[in-house]
Image 1 (tube, rainbow, N blue to C red):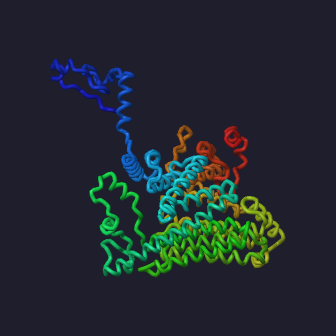
Image 2: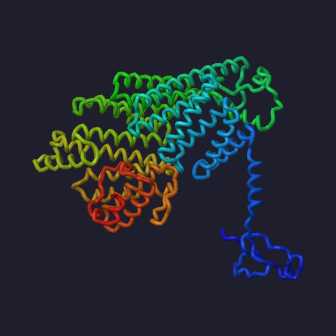
Length: 580
């Protein structure tokens, strides 16, 4: 915002003291007219003044362990206020720096190591803006190292350190999978994460049992307790202080520090969260092992299901399965269906097991939405599942997925049509019957995504996936150009909505800033460019989308839509430069 000129009052010029006093820096000279906007020369500090300023700043920086921890806590709190964006990330980075300095002063402090490892994991998972792949790997490596240290210092008795270590190890494994580098060491880290979560559950169950026994002896819950019956986990700080002989006159900095590192009270919800996280980890392990060791994969799938079943005693006071448990169960069914599909013959006869699992998952997603109408994840995940199911059907019948599979399907449908097949013979025509099934399935997926968008309009990833799906559906209407145009127009609308939600500027002169979901932004930009290439008069929009996509470091794997760029853009010079 431009600073307002300061107008001197008429009487001010008559005052000698005011006239002789030097003007304030950054203001207009007293005798300058406001419309001339003439500023005084900027005052530049001397080298001695600059040296003195830096000395004062250095002296003001926290130097002791407690002061550094307090500074880290303050920086983290400021980051939490922003949640995402450059400012939030800078505050979290500052918190890490302070904890790192504190750790150098007191190397065996478990709480400091835990908080540093936890914040490093937070930064590795930060999305707006996200770090580069190499930076993320480095952050995760350091996070695992710090959290391992915290776990050892706490003698494997701190549930929060163990839980975060498991999450960091899982993230490292997923990155290795994405990079195609998931070797024996990666699977060993997955085993370590599995053991860590087993330890977390044992600690939490013991703590919950202890607090229930205390509540039972006292005959009532503490204020604010919501578990039933008497299932609270609030710690009795007064009793703990008496037992340990803690000095209640601890200074403010130490009191704040103890509060920040205190273990989170265990509740039924805590137990459910741990069991769901463990089931999710085991599902990931089972999926990854399906092509390596089917017996171990089956064991992991069964263990995952058992973890979800173990949540039932903790649903109290309701008897309805919590949404996150049901979502994890549906994901398990989908993952197992995919695993069976990958390892079984691609024939109609061998398709019954994985088809049944996909169908069971579909029914479960509908049940989740019925029980939890505000759960946007259920229809969004159902849309993902149905698109995967359709891809499996296409591969099983045609032999290849994606755009090549759709092209082959269209050719076979044309052959069956030219052979004189009537509508009454559709069930006997494999390509035509598959076409009908895929149309119905992908239409249901589109409906699921739209439901998810209605529940949570701010979810840009759903809009981007819906754009990909609508573009993909054009492959099922090769003989119906009008329907293809409608679907392409719908896809463009969904992509633009995703970009608007993320605040992506499509101007060629704009700098591409980080968003809350950079992956969704890249997907929407590439998808929009593909779609616009099929329309007359939208070449400029196609170019803008591609330029912004390239500036974000995009690659062709960003878009899930099974369509190609239209051939008419291939001759454009800008297209060759961008895609070359």
